[in-house]
View 1: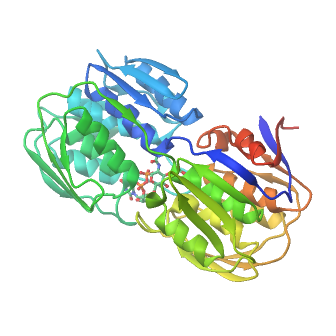
View 2: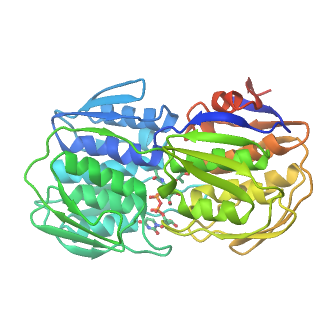
Length: 420
Ligand code: EPZ
């Protein structure tokens, strides 16, 4: 297993390319199952998660060629069954259910199971499928969804924490070939949902309202192949912006979308960090001392839960009290005890982390637990005095394309080493 060895204390400087979005690419790759014609998807980040999705598409019978960020996939003849061994590796694979149900009127998918950041049930996905007329059976750890035919319906897809991103994506994909009109209320408004809708429309689907809480889909008989370029990864951009702020550096993030990052930019400004749009790029630098602030994670356009851990790491460096409240996932503070190993002072009170910031961090060996918690540990390691070893970086490789190489290009002293 690999680790990152980081020698901290170097301000990041220079330019970094913003990769394509993992969370947009995964459902878009699944959407290619909706047609038997070829689809070409560009700017797909090279990650273990996207490579898993390619394996899943191939296990269903599709042909796929993934090279240099471009995926060409053709689902000429497919089957409706995805087994546990593949699905268990990546929760996001649940988003093949909608396309299979739409195209084959049957889908047998392994239930994703628990996750370290929360229970993450799929009840809303299944509720949406049932509203379209599917019968759902759960047996032996599998979901069996079947339908004689799918008919458009109006449904409310809000849950305990508000809207669901992949639930909205899955139901939207199930509805594009249904008879009649589907209206999804309390739909997720994330840019990744909009990007999926754009791809589906390029395939011939009829969708309006994506990006708003009410999405309307008018079913069509057939979809055709299409070409699409995936949006930039706003979570990767936010992660690099926070790394620059934590090291008191100055960087340019090439190809990042400021309009997808409003809540993050707003909170960074409050913390004393300037984020300026320069053409298609973002320029990030600190304006003097970091300041404490409060953050609450919410569905889009609120502050993204996928940036919570990184922001928590930043606040350990801001003198004073910061409060971070996690409203989306029940147990997304795994990074807190590891940050404490670097000398951070953080207390958990219910859904909030109370950070007493300003004490300098010092390097130590730490353990990655999930994708975004690992990014927080890398940021803290870059800011800490001395050496930090971040173990189990396979978590990072799931969602960050060549993170160590990109950071080295910005001057960081980081190496990928075999874990001892
Ligand atoms: C997507 O997960 C992202 N993953 C997550 O990013 C992200 O954290 C999350 O959206 C929220 O923004 C991908 O896009 C692949 P949800 P998703 O359904 O769709 C509850 C990362 O780090 N819920 O919007 O699975 C759920 O438990 C990952 O890149 C139900 O109760 O998240 C959670 O509390 C981590 N029933 C809340 O809704 C359901 O049927 C939001 O989850 C579905 C969800």
